[in-house]
Amino acid sequence: MQETVDFISEFLPEIPGVAIILGSGLGGLVNELEGQVSIPYEKIPQFPVSTVEGHSGQLIFGYLNKLPVLAMSGRFHYYEGYSLNEVVFPVRVMKLLGIERLIVTNAAGGLNPEFEAGDLMLIEDIISLMPDNPLRGKNEDNLGPRFPDMSEPFDLGWTEKAKNIAKDMNIDLRTGVYVGLQGPKLETKAEIRYLRIIGGDAVGMSTVSEIIAAHHMGMKVIAFSVITNESIPKVKKEFTHQEVVEVANRAGEKLVRLVKGIV
Ligand SMILES: O=P(O)(O)O[C@H]1O[C@H](CO)[C@@H](O)[C@H]1O
Ligand SMILES: Nc1nc2[nH]cnc2c(=O)[nH]1
Image 1 (cartoon, rainbow, N blue to C red):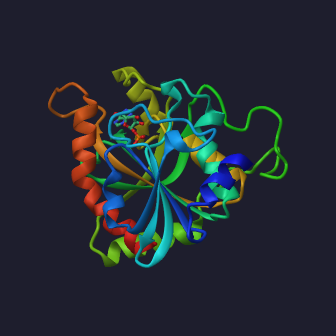
Image 2: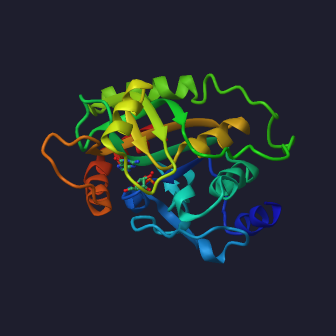
């Protein structure tokens, strides 16, 4: 990690105040960054590389409303074959770079029957149904405790502010629980009923491990889902990743405005 931190530090004009992980189709935010410095993942020592369409694969430093931020344009997923330790590697590096705040975004399926494609959801809690955990193995005590409390993985002050900012901006913000599954297969109808029964409002294949790792290290975290599809569509149609990216691109505009406001 230190090798990676030293490498990235050379490119950063200053320590970013906030890191932002961009979900599928949500890369549009980078157009808003001024004074950009981009580092392709393949140039960064020890960094994994993105293999999913809609995830461009670069770290981008820039100024959002004059505040220095670091955007991860392209994240890593367990289904790509990476271990969860590899999936959260960039989050750990961000913290070691001195970044204290993290905004996580994703494209997700709506489980809550009141949600529609294009809705924006503030993630208030998570359920990790990943087959592993990024904290498994020897604990690095300099990162965080062996048994981190997870009763409040998100920063309450920050989430309250986000809700108020959304209201001021006239952005309709849903709230709910995000369930993270390993993917890459989509859910069966019975699995969707199950996920709803256990309390899920949105479902996806990312985010939960990043939040666990960030909270372990004491970062202040906030997270949003763009609902790109209803997991049981009202009109029968098959899931396609292309549609996820298209809807996220469109609805992402709202998220970009909100993130800008929050930053
Ligand atoms: O969670 P993000 O990276 O936004 O991507 C979501 O979209 C992809 C499926 O279309 C899956 O990778 C799912 O997790
Ligand atoms: N697991 C899962 N991931 C998604 N990513 C975007 N939509 C979905 C979905 O419906 N299910």
